[in-house]
Amino acid sequence: MTGDRPTWEDPTDPLRGTAQGATPPPAGSGGWREPPRSRPDDPDRGGHLGDATGGPPAQLPIPPDTPSRPPGEDQGAAHIAFLARRAAAAGRRRLTAVLGGPERTRVIVVLACVLALASADAATVGASATALRQTLHIDNTDIGLLVAVSSLVGAVASVPFGMLADRVRRTWTLGTAVVLWGAAMLLSATATTFGGLLFWRLWLGVVTAAAGPAVASLVGDYFPGSERGKIYSYILTGELVGAGVGFAVTGDIAALSWRAAFVILALVAFPLAWFLFQLPEPVRGGAAALVAPGSPPPATEAPPPEGHEDGAQVTDAQRLAAEQGIRPDERLAAQARRPRIGLISATRYVLAVKTNVALIISSACGYYFLAGVQTFGVEFVRDHYHVNAALANLLMIAIGAGAAVGVMVAGPLSDSLLRRGWLRSRVLVAAIAATATVVLFIPALITNSMLTALPYVIVAALALSAQNPPIDAARLDIMPSKLWGRAEGIRTFLRTAAQALAPLLFGLVSDWVGLHTTFIIMLIPLAASAWFLFRAMRTYPRDVATAEAASAPSPT
Image 1: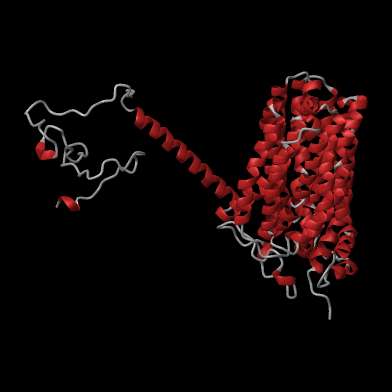
Image 2: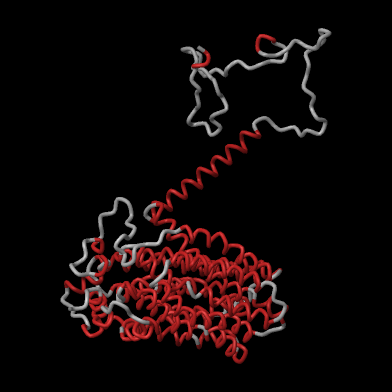
């Protein structure tokens, strides 16, 4: 029965599905046969013999301007498209496997894009410095002021956003902030005077302040404590990718029009906001953290000790502190056990944790130098090493690649050492990296040869960025989960308040002594960053134990 004849498709053929109704070949025929097809001159096969006068068979008209195609061109293009789809699918599968499953991948990629957007914005201002000076008739001090104003306003706004992160749905808060961010960027592109651009940058700083507290709190609740260093490595890579886009892509566009560069960044914000609204809100305390498929339950996922708040995780660092008999600060822990903690009480608690204060100061010093690099790095490379703008942007990409390696290595390394019983591993990895940063930047700034400086600068960028994932993970270890948002908001306020002065100070000093001397002077904050990290190693174990004790209920 012809109607019951099975359809055959070759599973190895990318164009399968075109031979509908084909039948298996007879034995020894050597192949498959196509089903019968109609011919215009065969009435038994659905055709016709010709016109009514018995003339020659009718032919379909061919348009005179129809282009001819070489045989097989359509199949070749389709095959290339098929291979591209297969490569993209393989890449997605590989990324999903590395990040630990589709749900974890979605969360990590979206949070990384949030930081990438903020970083791309700051880098775009620096890469657009020349165009902004020519269009708006401003100097380096004004360029620094553009970045400083948005950072200072963001520092103030981070405190209320930190409170929101501890009390409301964080994914929706972030999504709303990103929508407003895109609108402020579009309005920035319409500015015709320096005052107008400064005004919109001020509002831009308000909405970007939501990122720090919300991302920190979400990471703590989405992922097990044993792998937060690795997770921060993935997410902070997005920050570096955003900086690279700001320097290279939008920087090159800004050479033609800085307004177009701002518009391109603004348009990216709206689809990102949609993805944020689609993220599920995690259970607070990390009791339902996303564990990679096939992974054994980590130590932090074991049932919590009796009395712990809402099943909150007990991190590997906190377990090690308990095993080593480290006693908490009971007075400080009692403050965090209160059912409700206001902003003033939360601020007192956060600043009473000695390790947190040391990490705040160290982070501010490190970001102080980094903020100057983001704002004036391309111009410094172009002037000091005598390269053109396009090559300077490419060199900044190479440096960014080194920074990406540092971020990707440091987090997993600190997690691995922690699992092996090194309680201070997260702070230790950051302290060693901070020391290496200062040592490596010295020869890079002394030489005038780009080829000589490049290896030092790449490795120095690696060491500079390697500090961030373990430090960010360590901050979650020393704070009770119910204070993660406010702790990050307060930390962001203090760190950003100091860091916001960096572009302005860089601009003032560079107008006075030049960018080369300015970058050498700014090595002093980098050295201070390393010193404070080594100091934090002494107080870290007790503060970890205090955070664990703070999760227990207050005695009745």
